[in-house]
Image 1 (cartoon, helix red, strand yellow):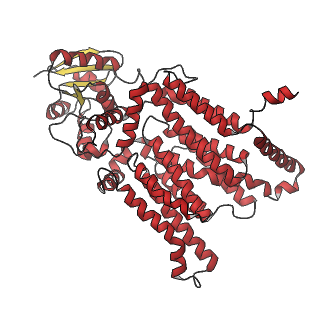
Image 2 (image 1 turned 90 degrees about the horizontal axis):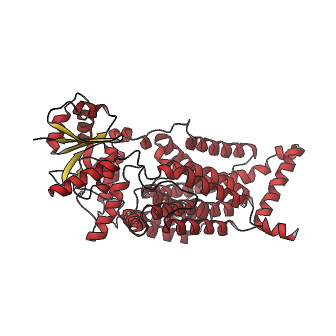
Image 3 (image 1 turned 90 degrees about the vertical axis):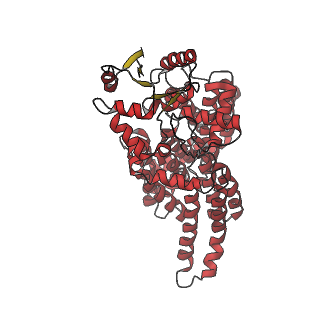
Length: 518
């Protein structure tokens, strides 16, 4: 009997859910993990910084007759990605970002929610729902670092607000100094501090009343958050571009054209799994607050959930950050459901409450989730360093049935034989980063997914011209491109095949290449 208990020792609910979450993440998400069109130029940016020891001020990747000023707002994350790729190629890149993602939710937020809710069972359920929510942006891009830093900032602001432990705020400028060079989501962190300010102000009004509250009292309570905000903004300016970084992000967010161009900037589709997880989480929080008979959310919880939920309803890209701020309120609400009067009225519900209490106690008596999480993280890193992430037997890197691998092998070989200067390639924006990555600097795309770099006018002209029976000939000639690389099944490729001054030099089931003849 003792031997059986020893063997079952690690098998608690938290460990089981963590293992299933990590396994599902690897098996289900890895096949399309590197599908994002920006993977290529992110890695090449990291390579550029590594070789030249400075951040690019002008775009070095696209084919153009003029220099385009470029703010590489994710250069530090790109450098980390490239150095990782340099050491262990695609598998290590997959392994590192997987560990970052699971450490964010199960290493930081789960542990934080468990302490705040005093319930391991509730924290597990809350973290699992949020973990599934955030997977909408589990992609090979620096955004995963942004989610990590946002989680750290959230925990620091939360502790400073709830425990009035203002020393946590002193760490925020350091966090923002790194974060602003990793990913543009640092703006959400600044919003968090502002919401902390608002929550403290609301609490002061509720506690003392607007008539008796003096300005000195308000300032005394708000001062730590004000200082944290000021120094954090200053820390964000400690980047190679200074204040221009804010202008760059503002230009992207203010463009209705670019906001409507990409699905991630559109409103969520609640028929999909991740947005449904958001609805479930909010519904549970509202239900708990209604049946318990007293407010369970603090002013900070309320304003943060309200603001980030509103942002999510405007653009689905915000969902991972909503997932972060949902965990603690959701875990606290679940843990307090047992205090509802309905559990005392019905014996079956009272027994259910007792059962969950026993589960919580068992979680304390078995192997700590930290140990299991550490084991899983080390296993993923070790396996990826050796060339294969555990539980995954598929291919790594951009998908071979979605990107023109063979076409670029052919075209780079042709360019190598010619020994000429780099040539321009007109292609779809989704392939631009891939051409940058695989073109060996002999081939340069004329367009990729960096919207603000190219501007609205260029994008509109491209989308207008590069269609069948349109002015695509003039566009290709104007940009000075020698090659046109398109999906084989596209109608435009069929139209170009009819042109007398374009020779088809390569085709396969995925792509076709035309060479412009002078």
